[in-house]
Length: 353
Image 1 (tube, rainbow, N blue to C red):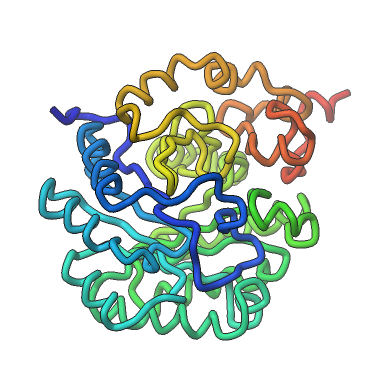
Image 2 (spheres, rainbow, N blue to C red):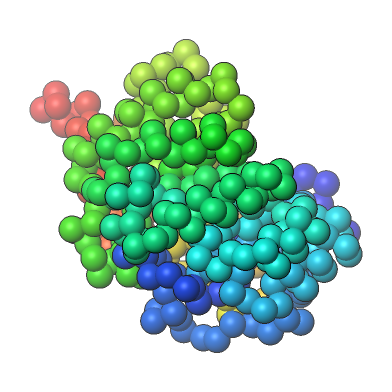
């Protein structure tokens, strides 16, 4: 029986690493895959496990999900068997009328990823990719399916971030999500040239706060997936912070046991980016069982306790609401508990010294 109040309302299946594109920061390229994709039957079993867990939303990411020939068969299982809501993200690279018709048939909440205006987007996604994403947005908008627009911050698009807000307004998206870069997959091989500096992130995240305030009365929400965005909101608007942090903040590091996703080969992961931490496979154990094991894991209990953080993160007065990105900290320092170098904030105790 499904739980009445599950710890997560959505579980996301990274259904493939395959993609028509070759974005320079992609975390999920095929070169880094450990195993092959699960078959259709196991894809449906993933849906079964998500439903047993109690989550009402089935998320689908990639790679490019629309390159899987069976993706709509798995979606049909989620919709027709359990009545689940389905969310899917696409780059527009594999978008066509047949796929649009199927997205409409199953009423799939669809997100499109685009990284700024044409110039900045095509630097990281390839020539012509902007037009493909715009075409997908237009067609999805006409069907009432455009749920979200997703932008990843790079050094190339920091001055074009508001363009995503314009697109959301033009095409009627319900939400915008801004990501910071996590150096895994191809993004790891292109660092540091691709990543904004800590000072640039600080400037950009303050800009995003301004966008959130500017567009808060419009028809779409602005969400920022970056741990230290919480600190910026706290500094900029202390009176609003508690309600915002409780209801809206989705950018905190989740590797401490606050997230569970499923990879293309059926592995469970406690981080949407880190490839090194896996918790068993859907073929061998259930999602609910795996979640329970995660909550008792010694590593994840240590990560959840912010007293174990080191460096600037360890003495920061904002560590309980932020704590940095642990995957990024490990990439740059070799230590999962060290300072996240993408943040430029100097904690009060160090300033006083």
